[in-house]
Length: 113
Image (tube, rainbow, N blue to C red; front, side, top):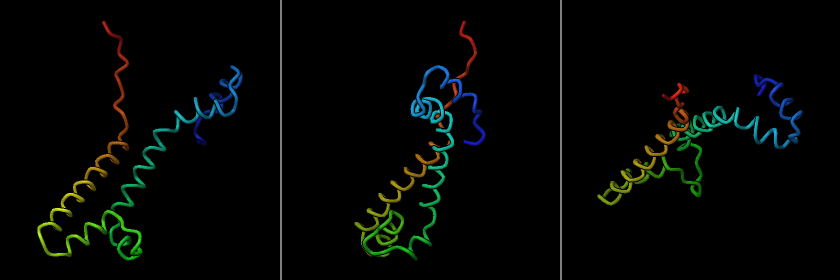
């Protein structure tokens, strides 16, 4: 936010935009990529900290990683299948997080013939 030029908000205000509209239509779109990347990194870090989660978790708060661990610790094909499904969900969430980090593809601004 500190690196955003103040002239953008000032220009919007001189055109009659209220402070909330400046925030919603000018500031938020400019910082959205940084917010998206920050949230995705936080989610990826939270998913990757299995040892801390296992150590600090409470029985009534089961996370996805500890649930996989619990299913792998029990015998039987049904538990293995459940662990594999949960691991697939975890991989999907990680893929989603890193897709959000990369952001939407930038379109080429070359003129069309």
